[in-house]
Amino acid sequence: MKLNLSRREFHLTAAHMLLASSAGGALLGGAGPVFAQSSRAVKLGTFGAIDAQNYIRAKNLAPKTFGQGVGSDFVTVRAGSEVISAMAGGSLDMCNIGSSPMMVGYANGLKASMVYVYKNIVDSECLVVQGNSGITTVAGLKGKKIGLPFNTSVHFAAVAALKFAGLGLADVQLINMRADQIASAWQRREIDASYIWVPVLPRLTDDGGKIIFKTGDLNRQSLLIFDGLLVRDEFKRKSPDLVLAFLKDYEQIARGFKQDPKDVVDTMTKFLNVDEATVMRSLNTFYPVPASEQLSSRWMGKPGEKDTGVLKTLRTQAQFLFESGQITVMPEDVGGLVDSSFVAKMVA
Image (tube, rainbow, N blue to C red; front, side, top):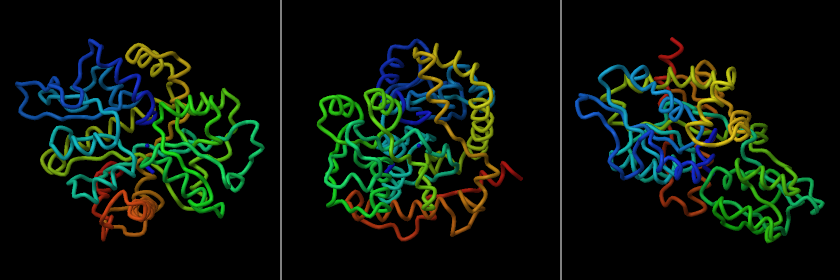
């Protein structure tokens, strides 16, 4: 269940590239280049992906985004659980994260809130079957082996897709696999299907795999799968202007990702040492949601709204996490996780 342009894209390979990069930036637990003279600083998370944070980093835009005299520390993380741990320890202020680990953190008392829908997940995560299987629908997976990483957005999406197709967990074999294990298991034909994200997904389709379900298909069931921007509550209270500054620049950068891909390709191929096709694949599966849309009840809604698309999805995810034993206490009110006041300021 758990939205690089996904937080997941290149989160293994690029993180290692960044370790050796002379561009600097902190890894989780690292020293990090927070400017000593700064009276204020922001610790901004990135999954080592083609994301707005790394674009800011590559173009050295932090002084423009946050203002002169504000220090910036880019913290590279590899999983949503690392985001939660870092925020709990105060070593990370803001980061994009999937709604599943976000809910796990909230249920366990993390003092942080989602202030923005970072991206809508549509076709960067898909359910793919072996090309010679003859399976054309989700219902056709009965009795089959499906490999996927547990406790992620694809885990939640897979269970939801099975449910809407009339199948329960007892009807299939869900196999917990790391993303980097799936391609080899697929090649050995040890699994009949996989629900996985880019960049693993293209490796499966290149090997004959057929996509039968996209995460965006859940929209028809009023479920939204998304990445949110999570902000530590203490930082939000002390530096609301820095949160708002990042969101305003993020929206502009996200627009540029779609409207001016050449600039992004030129920037990110050099910064992450990846090829153009990889960058374009990421851009083509990146779906930002403008602040004006986020303020509608379909997404975050206006401050204080209780019946919104984001809240409905979070409640459904919380129930899934509780029933699957991933959280031990069902949150009484998930509304405390969502703060749309910054979005409201952006469109005022």
